[in-house]
Image (cartoon, rainbow, N blue to C red):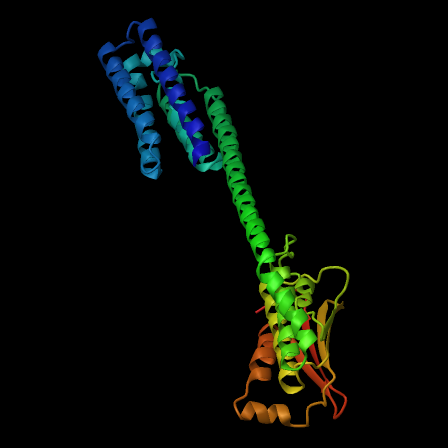
Length: 367
């Protein structure tokens, strides 16, 4: 991610500064007990500093293999300190040969994996340093360095993770803004063309009458659905109330509570699809101009949706006969959907008194 690049540049500067400091310490102590070995270690540190700065700048290379190699090189230079300095100087509490350079992989681990990985890197370096001091007779065991490494790993890792999260949120906000601008552009185009044509077809169909009136009614329904689709106020995910209001038309009355009926998104879509199938049955069996009423409410942790029409009712045994004949509109589109969601479907009908389909879904239920 782009937000990580400043962190890697800061670690590169830290590596160079720490390398210069280690060289100054080597000169200050006259090359320690074994100057040749000391300068050899400094040379290795110089080569790895240059290589790591380049490798960490390449996104494709940056990963676990590089992190592990970085830690191994650092620990090796740290373990060479007693041999270059001599056990006497090391036992006197002189700073190890790499000095502060050993913190670089800890910071790299923290930036790459967050505060937990930074703490792990600090524990590895601190354990190597403490092990060296414990096995060197007379060497004091300092915990200050371990504590500082741990704090640096945790704090830098935490800040790096917060920066990544901020970048991700910023990217999502930019994408949402771009999508909203595109939606606004499409809305203007649709409003100036398609919606006006549908409104004209609806109005002319009502004026002409006959079969044209049915076409006008269908055009009006599609206009309402399209207006809802391009609305600048998107519906909350899983709000069954908003999904049901899309079925409202001149012949379908939808009544819902004033507050959202929140279900899992997939469950709400399936319930709305079942209601749509019930309304299709009304148009098919009662007539395209038949009135229908959709009522949604909640009661004791259950969502209840009823679809009622003004038809002549369903004769006894008709639904079972239709299922045996292979007409599965009710069995699959309505009962099948709701049963899979853990709900129930009840048909209330009587000759000459219309039909009511009652759907019950437990709140929080789902397939």
